[in-house]
Image 1 (cartoon, rainbow, N blue to C red):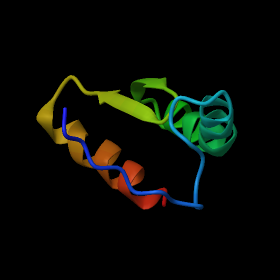
Image 2: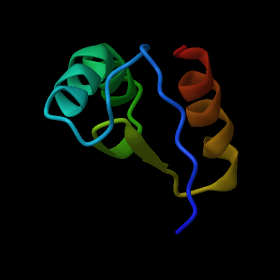
Image 3: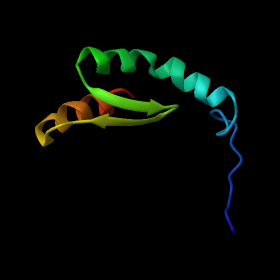
Length: 69
């Protein structure tokens, strides 16, 4: 398909067994904080969707998610 790949010595290769484990370790505390704040969310590895009933709630979830790292 003509894709170009760059070799990197940083990070964890995608698709490896270590990647989901490390994302669960790193995102455990943010998961707890989102639950504490009453946000509904779904996360698989490092992909997250924060669900809101109203547009006004969106800003609070966005603020927190952007402040993580």
